[in-house]
Image (cartoon, rainbow, N blue to C red; front, top):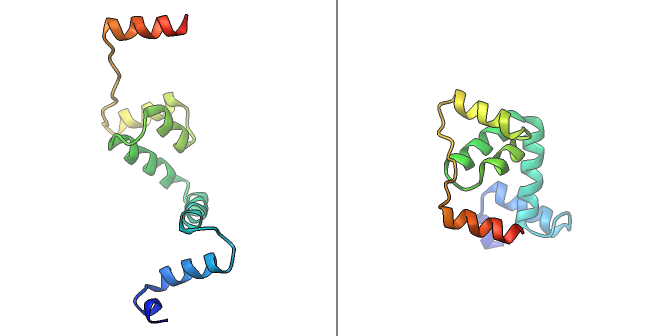
Length: 103
């Protein structure tokens, strides 16, 4: 009980729903909470996708998927906000290797 006193109310609530059997772990609770949060505030899903893309954590296509947009629409939004869109560049050797693997 002494340990619970040092926890915030949010942490205690989180542990309580896990102990009650509604979720297996903290990650499941957070995933469900974010899903609900983005359902209520869908515009923030776009902001999350842009932030992750800008930090290099995810690819352009993954960011568009998270935002629920086509790649083209997502690119337009980035351009309108002045956000640099990285385009991969490959050497001739790398391209030849990819072609060989596809054949």
